[in-house]
Length: 459
Image (tube, rainbow, N blue to C red; front, side, top):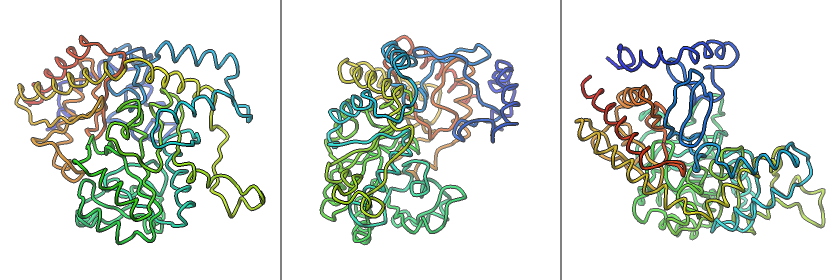
C-alpha cells in the first residue's frame, strides 16, 4: 500500500492545505487538471503559491517550505533576488509593456548572452525554451537544406511536435535499445512528424555513430541536452560529447545543444564551458531569464544568417530565409530580469557558493538514505541533481525505469509535509541549490530528508 493511501504524511498534508484543496476545486472548473501546465499537476491536488522569497515558498495556507524546485530550474539566485527585482521595477517604470519597437535592454541582454556563451556569435530572443528549440531547428534545416533531425531517446527539447518524439514510451513501442524507434509523446502529433526524427541511444557511442552515419545525408541537426534532464539527471559518459562533436563535424550535421536546463546553471559558460565542447548552435531559457519568460537561440554567424532575407530581393523572404518573429520576443521586463541575473552570474562568486552546497546536499541525501536502509541512487552535476529509488546510478533512460517511482513519491510527500520540496513528486524532476541557500538550510533539508527516508523504510 502506498503512503498516499495511508494515514501518515499524506493525510497531514491534506489537513495542512485546505485552502489549496478548495482552490483546486475552483481550478478544475476552469482548466484541465486545475493547473496551467501538466507538469504542475499533483494527486490529489497541488499546493498553490502564496509568497516566495529567497530559499522559501509559502503556500496559500501559510505553510512554509524550503524550496529546491526553484521554478523547475530558473531560480539560480533564489526567489526575488533584490538586484533582479530592482532592475525589473526600473524597467516597468521606464517602459514595461511591449512596444513593437526595439528596446535597448534586449540588445544588452543579447550581448551578455553572446559574451558568456562560447558557441554564440549572433543570437535571437524568444519567450521560452520550446520556442527557442523550434526556431533553432528551423534555422538548422534552412542552413543545411535537409529536413530530418536526430535526438537521443529520453531527451527533451521542448513541447513542439518535432521535439516531442521518443521522450518516453513503453519498451514495446520504443523497440531495441541500440536501434530505438521514434515514438511521439502524447496524442495530437501527426504520425508523419515522427518520420522526420531519428532517435539514438544516449551514451552509446557505437550505436549513435551507426545511426547517424546511416541517416547523415538527410540530417539537418542533432539536438541534444548536454546532460539529459527530462529523465532525472543523466550526465554524459566520458568522451561522449567529444565523439559527437567530431562525428557531426565530419558528417556536416549541425550540432545543436539544448541548454535550456543547463544554460548558466552549470557555470558562467554553461555546459559547453564545463565540458569544453563547442556546438554549432545553442538554445537557452530558464536561468537566462532570471525567472521571467525569456528564451534565446544562437550560434555561428553563418548559420544564424539564414534568418536574414536577401538584401537584393527582400520580397523573396518567403522562399529564401528562415522566418523568426514573435510579438513578445525581447519583452523588456524579461530582458531586464535576464540581464540582471546574468550580470550577477558573470560578476559574483555564485558558482563557488552553490556547487559546494549542492555537494553537501546530495552527498547528505545519499548518506541519509543509507542510514535509513533505503535504496536510493543520488545523481548530481554542478548544482542540479535528483534521487532515484534504486540501488545503482543509471546512465540511460531505460535504466531509470528500474527505479521505484511510487516510493519516491512517498518520500517526497513525507518531506513536503515536514517543510522541504525536493523537486516535485515525480522522481524524474530535478532539484537545485540556489545562491540564497545557506549551510544551515542544507543541513535542515538533510534532516528532513532523513526523517522521510526512515518513514518510508518503516512502511
